Amino acid sequence: MFVIYHVHYIFLFPELYVENEKVRGLSFRYTEERSQDHRDVYVKLGVSGQREVRHLEIHYLNIWSKFSFLTLQTCSSTSSPLIHSALICAGKMATASKVIKCKAAVAWEPNKPLVIEEIEVSPPQANEIRIKMVATGVCHTDLYHLFEGMHEGGFPVVLGHEGAGIVESVGPGVTEYQTGDTVIPLFLSQCKDCRFCKNPKSNHCEKGWIADRQGEMSPAESRFTCKGKKLLQFVGTSTFSEYTVVNQMAVAKIDPAAPLDKVCLLGCGICTGFGAAVNVAQVEPGSTCAVFGLGAVGLAAVMGCHFAGAKKIIAVDINPEKFEKAKVFGATDFVNPKDHSKPISEVIAEMTNGGVDFSLECVGSVGVMRSALESCVKGWGVSVIVGWTDLCDFAARPIQLIAGRTWKGALFGGFKSRDGVPQMVQSYMDKKVKLDEFITHNMPLAQVNDAIELMKNGKCIRTVLSISPQ
Image 1 (tube, rainbow, N blue to C red):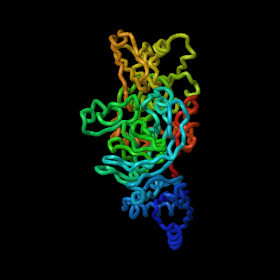
Image 2 (image 1 turned 90 degrees about the horizontal axis):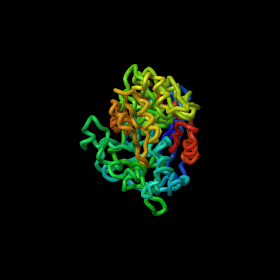
Image 3 (image 1 turned 135 degrees about the horizontal axis):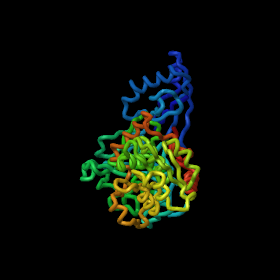
Image 4 (image 1 turned 90 degrees about the vertical axis):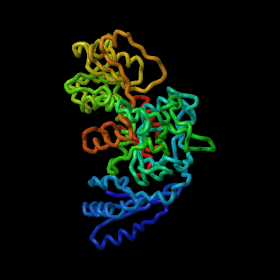
């Protein structure tokens, strides 16, 4: 077991600490590592037993947490809930107001492999936060922009939008966040002032990139440069970088004890699927449901249906290897469209006496959207479009809606982002929702292209990339 101090030009004299604690009968050991740019020093402090773990907890609570530049952040393999996320980060005094050079995965052009580059990250401006990323998931929306959307104005760009990290510094006007806070950057802002934020019926926000740059999928302004060129920040987040800068209205502060390599998934996919079932469809106890597509979003929708008390959850996918994973999240029945000669809506109607109460399309295919709608029972069936696409028109016969079905869409699962994500983190900490079960691969940032290939070929549910040492 070990705790890691992360030190920017600040020497905490670990060798003296270890010697002094011997007098108390406490045994520690330490090693030091420097980052390639020598900006960061990582001091790994070995923990030999529970007495040492408790001693470090007391040190943190009574001493370290009092300093704005020393904050509990991350740790490895201890049995203590507090120390489970314990990294002492001393970044405010050294890097604030300075340009940071760091590694990032850059998409220079569409349909090409990402390139690991050294980029420059400018200090946060008014109302902005600079975040040191710890971990990020690879989401299908990253692939959509790279291989499907391919908007000419959307490159070069640093992709990634499903991450978690630590606040390194804040710009003028930021009052709710400070150096050392544990946060999740958000692709969907919540300014809390516009008419959408104030309306309980919506989780949209009039501010942020999504208001007027859906094609580019990036705000016009960026704090990234590389080789003299501006790099766009994908959906305002760009988590495939060691550091990023995000507007404070698109950042959620979370429990510092939460494991960042797990809760990073709540930045997009898991909230999107789970919320689509619970918040948007509003699945009812005892109901029947069908979920189309068993990627991370679809499996999260299955989990949401189960959470809401559905009695029958039909998982639909053309890859039967995903059915066992769907069972873990609560699926009761499984349908592979390739096994049937008739439309899948007819198959589901036969299984459910006319159709399901709720269906969720989690693929991003307009054909599947129609099938999901037609799989609903007439009179009260609700179908929710969850999968992201903006490439094609979709269609259905008017009689499907005239007969009483409801067809609706869901963005980020209906969660108001800054409010909803901390709640979902707490639900995970309370073991009410699953996250670990979604993760099939863990890789360093340098293997981002391998992670993309896994997703392209349907060989993973979620790959989590390690961005900074923990």
